[in-house]
Length: 124
Image (cartoon, rainbow, N blue to C red; front, side):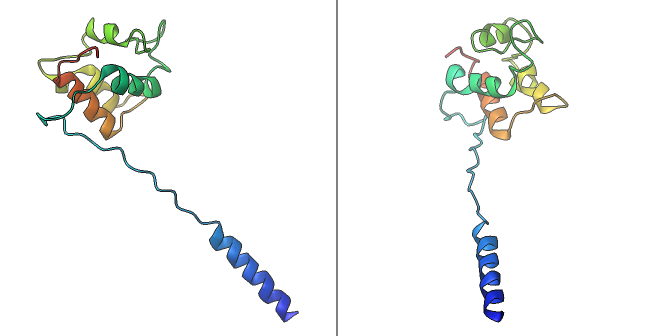
């Protein structure tokens, strides 16, 4: 009977400690939007995916403006007040999601968007 308790206790401890795991999730690097040597941010490969994952649920064709769907995002942003190249920090596409908005950017995403605006908000 005592041997059975030891075996059961050993199995229980093995299952308890064996079930613990830690998955390392690397943090996305936050770029410095004021770095003059920063690489050029690509609208199509770096900015549009942010909009796709965070914004298009509400901001798409026929929904809330601006239309941030893949094919319309650039023209929608540049034909309105959402991008302010003279004072990038006041651009609505940068500031609005940082406040009390339905979706928010991570620090890395916000830095990319700000740097893209500072680099001239190119359609690249």
